[in-house]
Amino acid sequence: MAISMNPDTFTEGGGLLDDVDVEVLESKFEIFNYGGKGPATPALKWKLKPLDDGEAIDQFWSCGSSDAFIPSSDGESLEPTGDATAPRKNSNLHVLLESLKKAGFPMSKLEEGKISVLSGMKCHVVRKPAPRRPGLDQSSEARRYEQTILEVGKIIALPGESGGNSGEATASEGDPDVESMVMGILKKNNGSVAKKDLVPAAFDETKNNPQLRKKAMGMLKDDSWVGSSERPWNFENGIVST
Image 1: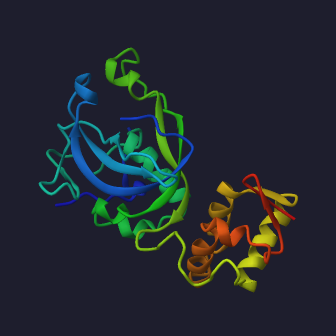
Image 2: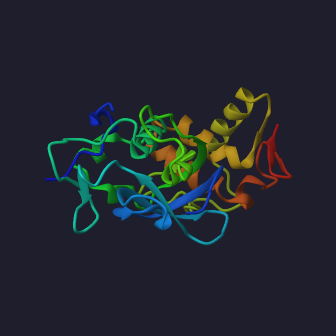
């Protein structure tokens, strides 16, 4: 029986990626032992690929004790080994999934516990201090590996969305809806916004308009489209401005 991955159901109780846009190439549960320096524990593993190039890297979020849960044989879900019905809210997994919820990921997709539904998502990740956990040995080797936790700051494209150039417009072709939205974002930001922040901002602006979101994501990831002289803004040194 799989455990729901909706963080609302949780109970009380690799490399240092930071501030970067990534794609989740793989999302699965494994047993992780902190590179041989900590206890073996069930963990969520994401294989992450930076969108601006770079090698893929494995990132882990611990889920609690293997006395309570183990990964299913296919790595799709967590299965209970005792009486626990959900991971605790002080787990690293809960911190990650709460950040995913705040970023707008539809939690209904996680109710069945199939964590592979996150594969293919493109997002901006940031590293934040790990929560203090009463009763945990703060000097333990495992704790030193969890001083910070990688969280989702923004969702760039949900699984199944391209998040890249959709091919619906060339650099010389404009789109009044997308351009109007960008001008609105610029107005909210005193006429200037970094290109790296434009796609996340547009994702937020189009949360109730999936057709515009799909179109905007393709265009705004294309520097040649954003920087075309046909656009009603300027684009120079990574900054879009009026």
